Amino acid sequence: MTQVAVKKNLGKRDMILFTVSAILLVDTLAATAAIGTSSIFWWLFLGLFFFVPFALVSAELGCAYPEQGGIYAWVRDAYGGRWGSRISWSYWVNVAIWMPAIFILFAGIAKQLFFPELSVSQQIGMGILLTWIAVATNVVTLNVGKWVPNVGAILKIFIFVAIIVGAIFHAAENGLANPINLQSIKPNLEDSLQYIPAIIYGMLGFELISASSEEMRNPQKDVPRSILVSGIIILSLYVLGTAAILAAIPARDIDLVEGLVDTLQLFFAGTPFGEALVLALGVAALYTFFSNGVTWAIGGNRAAAEAAEEGELPGPFAIKSQARNTPVGAAVLMGIASTLILLLYGLLVSSNEDLFWSLFAFSGVIFLLPYVGMFLAFLKMRRIDGDRPRPFRVPGGETVALLLTASCVAVLLGSIFLFVYTPGEGFQWPVLIGSVVTLLLGEVAIRWAERQRKAGTGEAELAVSHD
Image: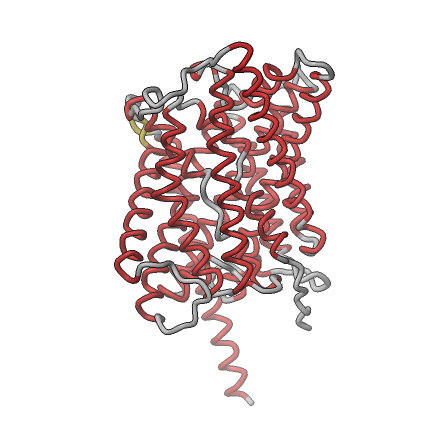
């Protein structure tokens, strides 16, 4: 098959917007605000001890190893193909699980805005439709597909700014729904532990753009710069956006699915043209939920396709469009998996909030595991490939690299534990069992790919011997 020339479609602006679209999640803003005012402390604390180190590590790996596949390629180079395959599987299947959660949130907001009688089963049907639109978006070239996350990032920034400005005027007129001061933001571990993983979840994604390294114009220069700019935008808006929701709604009343529209209506419904503004912002939020799914699917499908081309995931993941060189096989398989998950979980829950949190926690466990591998790969590549040119290097030498890795891995493992164990409630068995089954399915897929690769090698050797 003729190799399709790869077009360099991604410049620095695209990479900044892509990263903002990936990490800045309007959908988890309500979940983190539900912690209460101590969530402001956690955003700042985890921003310093996790978000910044994660950004630095992603910048070094992204410019030192600008390989198609991103996180998969980094772990493969450090620990071998099988571990790379496990990372790629977890990365891909997480998106397949998370997309249904984000599209259920889409349906919940659409119900609030337009369809008050929409049933849970109808919301699931809407989620399935959105899943296949996202699949179609994944199989066009990035010079077209990149505009979905680009526009999504711009709208997210606009929504966050609107919430922040609305909170300032609302608080000035009505006072604060929750006291926000140094005393109130002090953390209460008993009440906030179960939500801390949502904050970590909302900080991940700096590495995602590196899954499309071949399509970047200048990754060595643009990756660090895009991470710096996007990181400042993201953390600032997260902190201010969380404070804005807490300024308007008592923490105990924040709904995980409908909290965003509740906040918008509280801020703007009574103003001139307020209803129209709430509607416009709500529609913009709907688009950002869709763009989230597309953004992560772009990264996850390209990483899976790269692993499959290396023979480390089953062959169907490697199927690409001959005309566009896009990951058709991985995208279609993701669509099938997301559809089945929506149908299965739809039989088990009674409300969209239950469905959202169940899928969110389930995907969260799988989502965080690849990042443990990424940080360990960063440390190992420093040791075994230290002479490689690094246009950007995490400052501080090997001691700082070790400390950053240890800190970030500890935070990730703690967050994984809190996704499957809720203080005061015990283990969340559906989440734990679903996560274990998903990882076991990954092992089956990896072994299948290895058998395919060995069979192909044997056939090739036999053909050579006959010649």
